[in-house]
Length: 228
Image (cartoon, rainbow, N blue to C red):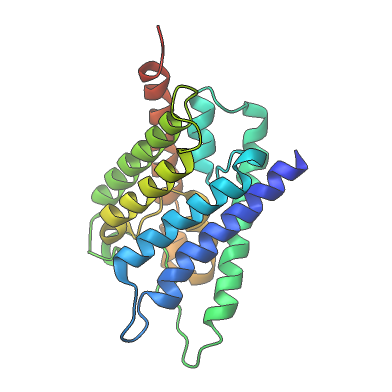
């Protein structure tokens, strides 16, 4: 169990450092900023690389919502849920901490949102609470459908990391303008703690919505994937 939790910690650390790091350090870089497409690819690549690196150890959840969805879908034991979530959140916070240390080394540094997730005035596109809630529930639902389907025993072997990584990339392309894309409570927590203030006040939504979406996907895929 210890190795599984260490793998989840490392993987979630990489997701936050790589994904949020691309937004904080590279997206707005003068003349060569990577933009929305680059940030979306970065998040997808973190999951893709970690799925190949630690999938065989822990399953590479990297996300409390994924663990909940797999539990509801009958793919994950209830007794491991709490330790997995703790490891993921701690990994996300560690990734946020390293990113903060690096980013604050630049003269004139300001957090400027620090890749946090938000709604209302803190949504990149000014989207409402309801729009953010619906977006996060639906995007997480689809993410879990992709994960559950790609890792089904009947799916082509060895391709799941590619489908999951590309799925997360697509989700970011759709939803960055709405919420800055969470679909992952550990990712949201890892940077919100360093932004503080409004990011922590709005963090509840980025726990609630992904978990609801993931649980619904677990229920739906148990029926959809049934051979009965």
